[in-house]
Amino acid sequence: MIAFTYPGQGSQKPGMGETWRSHPSWELVDEASDVAERDIERLLLETDADELKQTRNAQLATYITSMVILDAVERLGLEPAMHAGHSLGEYSALTAAGTLSFADGVRLVTERGEAMQVAAEEREGTMAAVLGLDDDLGEVACSRVDGDAWVANYNAPGQVVIAGAPDALVEAGAAAKELGAKRVMAMAVSGAFHTPFMSPARDRLRKAIAEADIRDPQTPVYANVDAIGHSDGSEWGGLLGAQLCSPVRWRHTLHNMFDAGATTFLELGPGTVLTGMAKRTVKGARTISVSSPADLDNLLEAVSGTDHGGALPHDGEYLFATERLVVSPGAGVYEPDPEVGVGTIIATGARLGSVGQSDVRSPFTGEIMGLLAVAGERVTNSQPIAWLRTK
Image 1 (cartoon, rainbow, N blue to C red):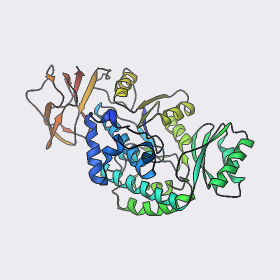
Image 2: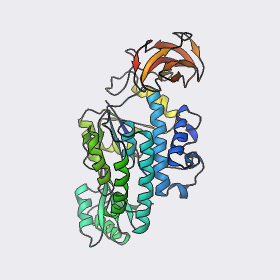
Image 3: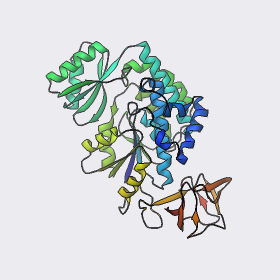
Image 4: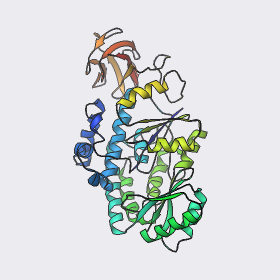
């Protein structure tokens, strides 16, 4: 089984959208800009490091990048058995699972970033990574401090993140070293995220969450708050509200997903932070990351010839590096173009038929090796229509 995972704030980097701007999935950037009423293309292509690391910018840029990459992976016909996202990445996971629409996801992430930045400006806070110390001792280090310090992230074995008031965090870091921590590293963040310092942001975000259309996920989404897979959409309003002031239980999430059958952890988004955490946490599982179009071929090679519950095969076979699936742009009745059949050579953008009022067009140039839908068949969004060998 394949688990899709999505990174959070801190994975962003300047120009991270450059390699995707000529890919068909880049169209999501224009859609997001209309919803957020911001120039997201500029954010992904031109914004410098200082501006990008601002919470309101980092969160939106990371979410949109993950959604572009998800769309590209779905165009290959790959589907997961479960989802999880780290902090902000939880919104990516919920959008991918169909719990949030893309538009609602953009609106909530925009509001979340603004609310957290305002909360951080109102109350000074910071975070630090503690390496080489058990989770329990990380909690002990914070409890020894007569001040505001908490564990904010349980990331991997021997890696926790603490957060709170700057002076209290210095003391907590010193206590952690006394307890055996190998290193305590200050993080370049503007606030104490996932602590009570974010209470004002939580209250503001809850109002936005109440206005969103939250549906049941198509596959389970594992929550940061309790590390449990949830399939009931009605639970997510409370979970998202609680998340801002609760620690991210990522290590527990990885273990629970592995116990539920996940054998491959696929990170979709900028960077490879989650891939590194998975390697350290779930021994024996396969870890893959996709952050650029070049990674798509590596992904197909990795899943080819292996029976994964989350991978969608074509006609009993698995895709290889030179093969692609053309998928449905939406749900509806499929009507093929009579000029297109097995053996037809098509160019990028060629029309294969229609689903409802939408054309089915190929994002790739190549030869049709097989048709996976028939005339009059009712198909779902992203369902494979044709198997293409690329040129």
